Image 1 (tube, rainbow, N blue to C red):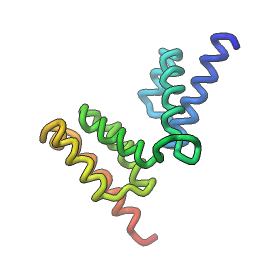
Image 2 (image 1 turned 45 degrees about the vertical axis):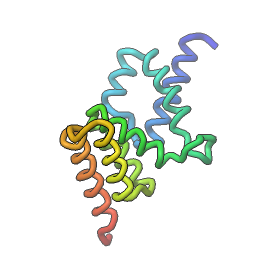
Image 3 (image 1 turned 45 degrees about the horizontal axis):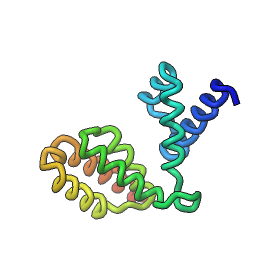
Length: 137
């Protein structure tokens, strides 16, 4: 397979991975794909491999993987990523008490600043999502 074909196939795997978990490719990753297609292709292959649910060969279920990413993003102060991953985990069945417990672990590892800069916003965002899910149609 030619390098261009390999890059295109890897880019498509990355796009499919984002679309299957988030329903879209986030703007920052679209920008990466446009200006650094090889880097997006490499990231896309890694992402498509790790973001497999347990029924598709992943060791962890997708809800757990989304929670782990939400907690890691909270630890490093990546608020948008933390909110997106936490929301995806909630949509997959993560409860607010489970999220809160994980966020407290982040506080223990990274300090209260992780809560004040990102964790509280993640919790608020997911509480809003959970509240909307519980509202009668």
